[in-house]
Length: 115
Image (tube, rainbow, N blue to C red; front, side, top):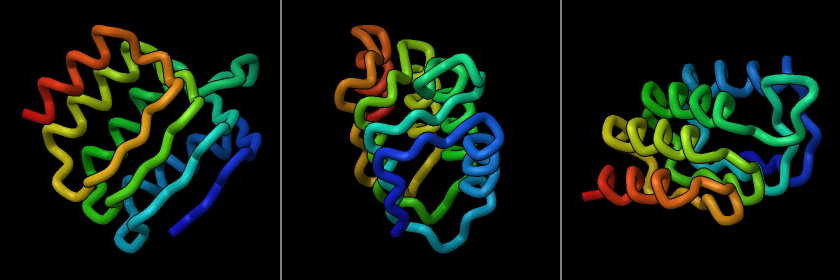
């Protein structure tokens, strides 16, 4: 279990986190509530690109069961990318996306992925 609640993880740290998730074999719970993970130093949220990068990591991750992305402004495209990752990821059983601005299209994509 890793709790990174309310951290200000910058560009290099965010990329390192994504890379670590791709190789992770033990972590089952990750809390990223109210973070400032950014792929661009001018951003203050994950954004679409960060959501896509995280989705890429989730496709390869086989141990994470809980991921909390509350208030990380993933955006519509990030939400769609996460939906695609969920089609492949077999370990994640709980994903919290409250206040992440995935929009109607991101929500539809996630709903379709969970069928």
